[in-house]
Length: 214
Image 1 (cartoon, one colour):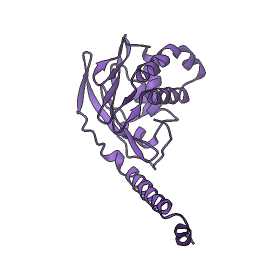
Image 2: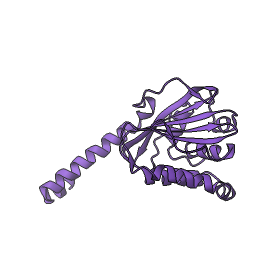
Image 3: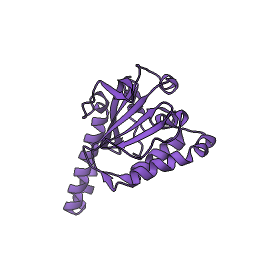
């Protein structure tokens, strides 16, 4: 029956459907192993302000079946649970490498959507100015292309410093609670990607879960 249906379609439509099916299958197959080896070779340590940080974990974020970015989490010391990461004092870094073209506005809005999904209404209201700044920073770029880097550093006593391609984007914003909200985009109870959450914590990935955002 499936064979008959394909032959009944216009040849180009049938070929397009088959090609799309193969691409989706390949992408889904990749999801099972992608977290074991991100395309980006992240350094095992990083210097943030006056603090030496260690690579806690790294993984790949998928949008549908396509790789969107690689992400690494740097901390003062290793931690294997979200609670330990979020409660840990000191400097921290989230470091990204784009793996395909990412529209700046879409990226900023997706980050804020993830932030709101893992915070209380009161927290969102308190940090509206910082969240708006996050959107503004990425909206100022038409797009990030494959290979571009961006980062979010928490600087104790100063706030969250955003970087695009190694360049600081204005002054730091927010406080320790705001960066905890940022961390929960990937480590919260409703993370953008459960496998990426496990990878950032240095754990074995669970069954694949892919949401449509960035």
